[in-house]
Image (tube, rainbow, N blue to C red):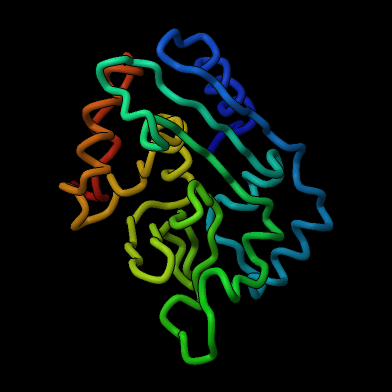
Length: 203
């Protein structure tokens, strides 16, 4: 992604101007120190997924929370919200024992490295050695979106992090309640909504 800090700053400004949105929190942390990038590369066995180093050279972490205010679409719960929670790189590549996996026998999810922890129970994640972004519902589901990190970021900004939006990228989840709500709410809140961005890769 070219100039991610400027893109994120513009997204936040758009949320602030939008009369159908209440912005609750917006933080874009300073760039990741070079020493931290070097350490992260070592933790990743010498190779970060494509686009990750360039992003974290510009941005250390991101947290944005908002809720829409369209009366006829309100559920008065978390499903009215958007949340972006891009974690610091050292946390992404840290130890997720007790959160993502819980025992030596739990091999299925040990490779999962969450980077967008948009709720306590779900995230977007890397699963080395694959570069593509995965959607993970903790302890239960793991879906390969087929999208690169940069492609995910483009869609993240377009979605503004609306509730469970990564499910739109997952084969097999096209008819979930969350995806259905996303397609209903987003055009009413954001006039520039482009539905073509939010489908499994290649569809």
